Length: 229
Ligand SMILES: O=C(CO)[C@H](O)[C@H](O)COP(=O)(O)O
Ligand SMILES: [Fe+2]
Image (cartoon, rainbow, N blue to C red; front, side, top):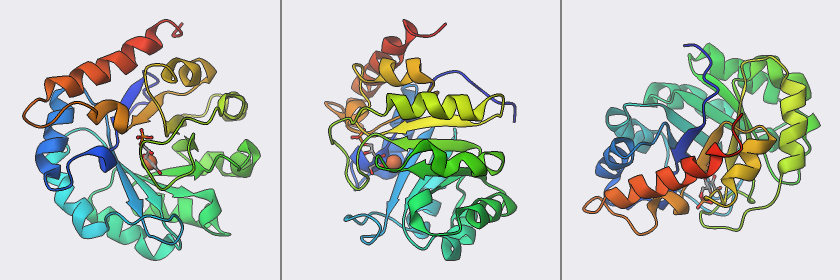
């Protein structure tokens, strides 16, 4: 697949109706989502618990775009094959989740997925400097992971530094947490190309009123147009 630098909006289904994931995924894709972001939490690496491989496998047939799975779990390595089997296209592990992220990224690619590495707000860009040749995506957390609906933490200096470090490599910079029409232009201007948004996409809408999802997605996308070259 060729490298796509266009802005991509990845709604996080953490803000969807948990009793209705299939229809929610279909609704956001029909309303313009580029990727579908799936937040996996273990109640240990982060203080919240969501879904594991069987749930992710059940989402798979509904996702026609890209299933972007964000692991907030430790350890990661014992579960890589299970998420490949569940159908993840991109599997992202936190650099803080263990001492051997290099091995983890190799294993994710060896299992046939694209490999992402995520950074908590307190972790510097330099933590991934020697991982960039093994990475397809760097996820910059703009909230402390664990919950949707939190306030955006300004990480624009880190994003600029990462864009500089990445150079010509085909590596996406994804922003996760508190992205809305106000914060999206700041992170795109700094060098981000994938915008995860949970509450800002799902607020006010539902599967019976999906047009609101479309309006919310367009509001984020349109807000980034002024800063695109
Ligand atoms: O990884 C996450 C939380 O750990 C979520 O992807 C993120 O919080 C998205 O939700 P919102 O846009 O509401 O902040
Ligand atoms: Fe996430």
